[in-house]
Length: 87
Image (cartoon, rainbow, N blue to C red):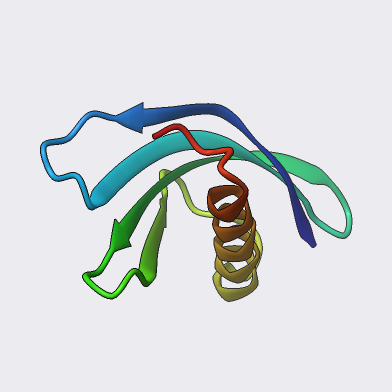
C-alpha cells in the first residue's frame, strides 16, 4: 500500500500561524485497487520546531486504518519538507 498523490489540496484560512489545516483527496494504491479518499489534516509546529500532524477521514475505509495513517503521515511530512504544501 502506498500514497500516490494528494489531489485538490486546499488550505483552510486560520488566525493561528503555527497551525495549518488542509483538505484534499488522497489517491491511495491498495494491493487490489486504487481509491481516492477525502482527507482532512493539520500540521502544528511546536516552539521547538517539531511538527505534529493530525489526520482524519470523511468516510470509513475498507482497509486497516493504522497503515493508511502511517503512509499518509510519511507522505505529508515529505511534501512539507520539500515545500510542496501551500503556505
